[in-house]
Length: 416
Image 1: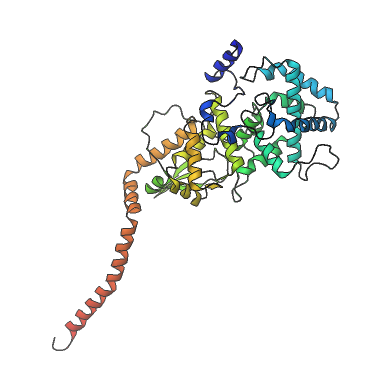
Image 2 (image 1 turned 120 degrees about the vertical axis):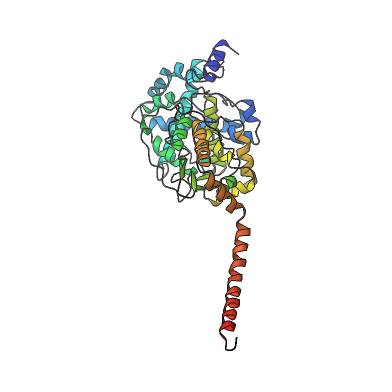
């Protein structure tokens, strides 16, 4: 490993400098089905998987997409290539892997074709009626579109945003519309549409995955660093929350930052964003969290916090069923498979401010309402016996009334 690579890795993991595009470490790849979560299936973007034999079929389509992207503008192809060439040094510095074997010419060519392909694909997906009939780029089947959509949001399959910016200086691309379409896959039908939030236009992403992550996460409350640490409540399942009187409810939006704890007169409430968990969204969720982890302390770990909170609430399949019943999880997998998925990835992810804030608020609720919590716990655990006793009492009351009325009748009878 070269000294330059070691220096960049040190900067990355001690939290200094910008995040780097790098391969997922071996301990993350040790989890079950890691290949389906981190390895591209159909297209390589950037140098990490460039040249892999099973991804070569897309190289010709990349070139066609690049020509389509450039020629449908008011500029010539060399102008786009020149813009990419100008940011090559900056783009090379964004990778942790050793690029010594790739000279500037080859690297520029890779960035040009991959960048144009990404932007042209986003343009195709953002158009309401699909690509115009005169486009030379082949029309992709729905299956291919989903496979490409999956691959371009893998943490190892990214190119620096500076490259896309260089290309977009010559041609406008509906990036926001594409991202809105992409993150809608996380949404459930009844959830409130994800409107833009304050500061959304000011965010400077590192790459496409980072931008999609930021839009899906949404605004996250800032941590209160001045508070002294307090004891944490040991919560291990959604059913335990129900036992102490904290009700689970779905948030108004599907943004991962839309998490909070509230309290009413009798009960507490933990609201979590409802999410549809299919193969595509589980893959994106894992890669967003992996990207946060690989930033080396420079992130708020918002997605990781969301995953960790859900994992804390899942101790057995019944807890997953509880989350489904509360309309928070909409998994395509079985309850046990969903549980296994979260438990597998959460063991390697960091705990962010959002995670600490929510668990502290749950602990405070438990500490400040001990009497109500104990009463609710007693009723919750003995509800069957209380109902049975209530039914028996309800059955005995009419009998007692009859006996009392008979006694009264006998007492008032003549000669009594």
